[in-house]
Length: 370
Image 1 (cartoon, helix red, strand yellow):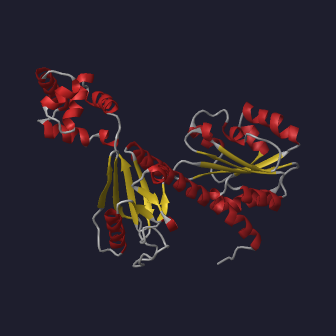
Image 2: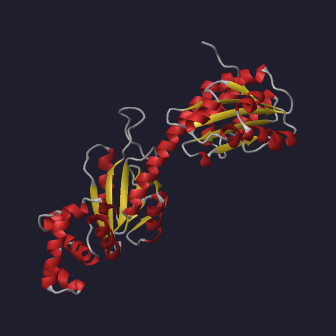
Image 3: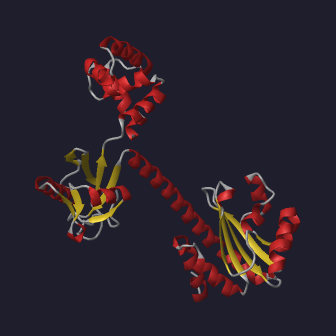
């Protein structure tokens, strides 16, 4: 097995770790520029939307390399044919096989900055992210710079793969956070002593203003009602010790309604069989929610989802809250006979076979998100 030299290690570690820097890859590009003696080192990363390309540079000189590598090629397949994956290209090749945009880049960007040559390589990760790694010199670049790019290719591909996985995880997290936000729910992760490990912005706001729940000493999650607080402590420790698997539900307030639902943390220990220890990570996730979206907003969504008129939708939502025909009619300012006629139309349009079925259809639809 070949052992990497210290110089390679100085480059490879920042390349892999660079996706966590802000801006990304600054350490790697700075060291690469120094190691190769070039004026600029550049990384361009592009997903499905070319308009959202990321360009990171070290060293002064030209800008807008993303356009240089992709301009004049409207279709993604055409852009990818321009630079074959993993092959190192020189400036002359890029201009010759490119077009007016590439020639204009030389005239408007490279020449005024005193830059004379480029070595560039494109790679792609399986999720569709393309990455370009380029070296830009004031003089002619040679085989040494090309060999460096070839050496870095598998590690640059690994960095793109990690970036793709990170972006996919971020997208999933944003989607999940959006659902929780629509539900009016925040999350708090707890260790076995009920100390807060992490929480989202909604939960943090509730901790700051809700009188029934707050952050105590050592970030201990404290409930105002002693009985509920004792249940929380015992429930979290039971989850930590695997004595409990079912969720723990705690109503905290009625006006406005605030609820807490505690579940086991959804990640496995790094070492199988490793027990949870105070201060060594989350053992439970507490979801805290405030209920209270205005009924008129929900009625508008009911109308759109099931093709109801505004009056029918208001009645449907009232029935879904468990009100009878007479009670709903009085609340909505309708006669009982009118309410009965509306209810027949509601059942026909929603396909519900009675009030209990209507409740199920409405509250198991996407309306549950609001």
